[in-house]
Image (cartoon, one colour):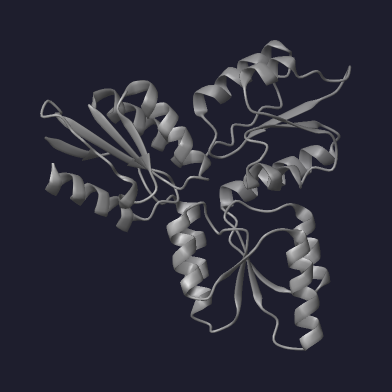
Length: 291
């Protein structure tokens, strides 16, 4: 039986950069907070918590942190902005309250912030293709100063109505499904909005989805490793499930409950952008040794 890892799997550039930033800040000895989980992987977040890193969940907690630090007159803690990015007003809160912060926003997400801020100021209606509950999408939305709509499916794109004469700028969550975005682009083109579409899906996302689909098409069993809240990991699972009926989604090795028939020739493995290499190697080695 062959165990094969997808060509593109595990930490992407933005996630690696963000995680390394937190570990570097831990070494300073200061009190470290992250605004939201630094990445969507419970194992990474748990390891950081064991090193004293705390997670701020929302604006109210951030404001409370600022008040407590000012009231005690102690050294200002360092807040690290998560890889997914945050709305503009979070920077305003940090600056207004003189909180020290390190920006670990993925550069590709940061690029989208600049695009929507600029186009929104021009009066364009910004359309974001993505999951409306995902922190990256919430962050992108927070850089728009005018009308903004979020669409997650081609049907929602089809039903979206704009005011007469309104100009549109279409962007995407970096981890959005590439094929679904292309379907949406065709819909907006039919509506006559050809000049305002910007494909902001990260190249690493496209490559990860493409390589996962290729290996799943050959595999008898497919294993997808990723955090339960990871958007890109869930999309990998959806893509692989369509190609391979025996697809498993796991967070850690403890979740793996494999019963492989002797006829299995190929087990494929892929992993989301916030899955550490150590975890991928553990799963690979386990399958190779035990099956």
